[in-house]
Image (cartoon, rainbow over all chains, first blue to last red; front, side):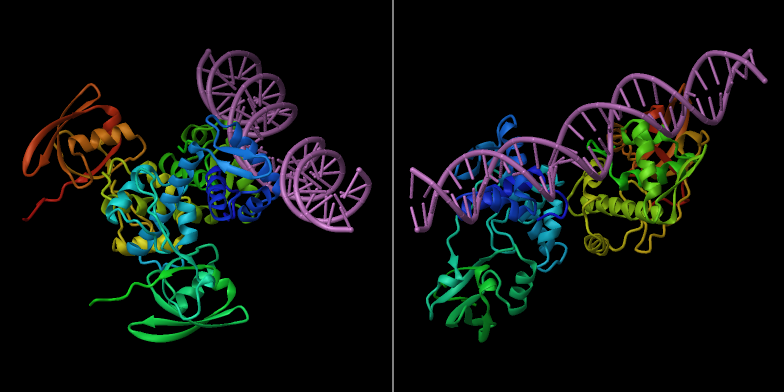
Length: 230
Length: 230
DNA sequence: GCTAAAATTTAGCCTGCTCTAAATTGGATT
DNA sequence: AATCCAATTTAGAGCAGGCTAAATTTTAGC
């Protein structure tokens, strides 16, 4: 992801995320995510295994896993990243679909002191602008439910829990149509790959059509009964 | 200064500052300031001269100078640094004597967009917490007067214009005694190296003694007639 | 002007991390 | 069981930028 060489923290974040989301972090997947060759990944994994204490374990055919020490580094980095994203939105007026790259660079240089001051200023928030949980000071993660929009039944009334921040173009599209965390939608129907949605905007139903790539980035949960009591 | 290898921006900032403050940026002085060996400086200077466009010129016995292109990079970096320092103080509640290191790391990764949003949030400020001028969007520097405290006559009533942020221990000491930009002092006397000052704190005169290292970090100007109208 | 000291550059090496290309390994198919 | 393909690792090299030690150049003192 970084246009410069990925740092140790980037590797650990990627291993942590891949192991969570796909069950395994293989050399090839890591290489794809980090924008380097598989050979480079092998080299770095060796280094991270040799670190004292070791930051990753290599399960022969099962890919890499972070050790507790490695997980700590990953979670610290994720905490910084998500706090920074929220900070950029709340304090500096960024749009939620344009904070990712800035946070990606800042997360490597922000001190623990600054991280905690930002958290304090924001009121120790539990979720970032994309709806992702922010590890707290002890690095504990708030629980999240939510399933991919693509798996929702036609007719279901849903609330957007989170959106993936991997692809800037997809994020822009989501912001454009108003599919942001908290938004309430109904699945109106489906055609080959496309999803027909009915999106509640200020109490009015707005029709929205999104393709598979965009749908894959949206995680939802059943909408609560009353959306806005007033 | 950075504990990691100094970046191109660090080199250019250092050349710019040294050329300003000492008239010349020699290999040895640069090496001392940047925490590398003179040989490493030679290598980097070569690289910066070869850059397209060239960022530095090497005046044979006169040390290095930044080119207009190099000066732009230096001023952009200085602008980011000083805005960040003020931001840390004003928004995140840092003390003015502890912002330097954090800004030193952040200045390399903050985008132009973020820089300008910070400037806007702070009201396009002209001076940082140490009293140093902040280049504006066009990179123009507000003029500053001010001379070293050590050169002030005994008996003179002075106002602190700026303090050097090079040495953390010195800065802490200055913060401790209240010698901050804007403070009004009278030079009560001198003994071998030490300066005896009378510092106005909330209308009351407070005696303060500082050594040569601390005095060297303070720049002053004649105090205006009325300090605080009310 | 000559010599000693200081400053600077050159030469050669090392580390960290990348890459390509070639080997290897494991699993899947027939 | 033999083979093939995909995944992975190894081998070897490059680049950036640091370092030390040795050479060179300047400056300064006499």
